[in-house]
Length: 327
Image (cartoon, rainbow, N blue to C red):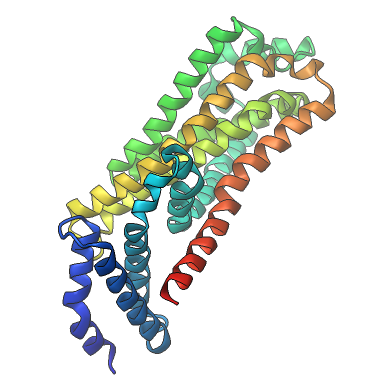
C-alpha cells in the first residue's frame, strides 16, 4: 500500500485520537484500550513499510500520548508528587531528549565563546564580571582565599538571596522561550559566557583548583539545572515555530504544559544549590579533599543520573508495560 493512501485511509481516525488526547472527546477505558491497540497496529505497519517517514514519528508520538491517557487513572492510586518525579518528568525528558542535546551543545558553544574571549581580550573579564568583583577576587587570591566572596554575609541570608536569584534566572531561561526560543538563547549566552570567562579568570591567576573546590560544590546542581531550564525554553520556542499537525495555539499549550513540568523538576535542585552555596561553599578550602569530591561527584551522579540515565529506564519500563497490555 502506498503511504499516501495509508494516510488518507486512517487520517480521520488519527485526528479523532488527537481530540481524545486533547480532552475534546471522552472515551471510557475500554474504548481507549481499543484505540491504543489499533494505533499500535498502524505504527507497526508504518515501521515495516515506511520506516524513515514522518508518519512513523507522528504515530509513535500519538501512541505514547494515548498510552499515558490510558494509565492516567493509575496516578490517583500513587502519591501524586512521587509519580510526578519518578515517572511523569522522566518520560517527558525522554520524549524531548533531543532538546536536552541542543541545550548541552549550546552550553559548550557559549561557554567556549566566553573562555576564548577572556583569553584574547584581557579586559573582557572586567566587562563581564565587573571591575569591583574582579579587584576583590584578585585580592582574595593573593590572600590564598580564592572563594572568599562566598564567605561574606550570613548563611541563611545568603542562601535565601541565592535561591531566589537562581530561580529568577531559571524562569527567564524558560519563559523567554516564548520569543520563539531566541530569548532563551540570549539569556543562556550571557550566563554561559560569564561562566567561561569566570573559569579562565581563576586559571589566569593560578587559582583554578582552589576555585573549583568551592564553585563546583554548588555549581554542579546550579549549572546542570540551568541546562535543563534552557532545554525547557527551547521546547517552548519549538512548540511555536513547529506546530506540526496541531494548530499553533494547541501546540503552544502542549509545549507549555510539558516544558513547565520539566522546569518545575529543577526547583529542588536549585534550592539544594542555594543551601550548599550559603552553608558549605564558604568552608571549601578548609574541607578535606575527599569530602569535597564526594559532594561534587555525588551531586553530578544524582542530577546527571536523573536527567540523562533514569528517563531511558522509565521509558523502557513503560514500553514493557504497554506490550504486556497488548498481549
